[in-house]
Amino acid sequence: MRILVLGAGGIGGYFGGRLVEKGENVVFLVRDKRKQQLESNGLVIQSTKGDFSFHPQLITKDQETEPFDVVLFSTKAYHLSEAIDDLQPFVGDETVIIPLLNGISHLEQLTDAFGVEKVMGGLCQIETTLNEAGEVVHSSQFDKLVFGELNEQKSNRMNRIAKAFSRTKADFILSEHILQDMWHKYLRITVLSGLTTLMRVPIGPIRESDGGMTYIKQLYEEVTAIMRANHAPIAPDVEIEQLASIETLGYDFKTSMQRDMEKGSQIEGDHIQGYLLSLAKNAQINAPYLTSIFQNLKVFEQTLS
Image (cartoon, rainbow, N blue to C red):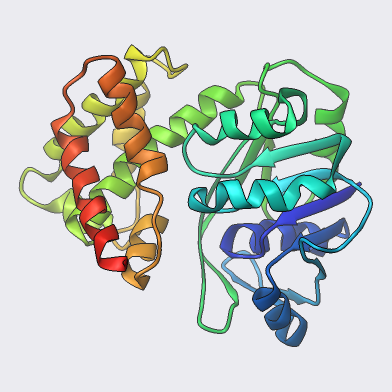
């Protein structure tokens, strides 16, 4: 199976690297600058689950090659349109695209561009970043990639992909309820990224502050109300389960959006909190907590221009 990984950053570099480590045929679609860096230094993974380094197979958007069987679509949401254009030459009649973006609204753009039959559902849960040398630093035990058919039906291609993804050091999981899984992750990342970017600290100080857990609970109630009003397939007790799981997070746990803010990089506020606010407006739901979080993100974005 020929696997294309779109990007070789913290997510694509890590999961693609684990597949290479297992022995799968993996190619990374990268920008010229990243290509030069990887050609010089290789792709280096520093991980709590074991380090790995190698010289990856690389292509850029202008190169010609046969279509791929599977694409791991691991770009940031603000690069989505550009990434779709870059990917077009590498997608054939039988190609399957597995997006690993945060949120949910990207599914419509991908199915519009490539056709619903070529897009699976997907998500990942991992704490990674690139250091100054361009190495992938994986700093926790989280390294879960979940995928499955959007129609939640079993398929031969799903089983073939699951076989290719098996027996790696990362946790590749085949799901028969991928849309619910994606919405549950969307809920979690909306709350956690909103909290940590608003407060500018890891989850520990927020959780342990006076009234901190009450604030987190109220934010969960607001976000789940928006999702349920828009018929999202979330479980009846999902906010209770996720609220309890916050107690298990490490004191210094940070979200990727918080790390991006600390670097002075672009963020995915429009794609995550902004899209949910549009759903709240459609359902005529007042969302003061989410509005405050989103306003904070918009103020930060002004400092980037």
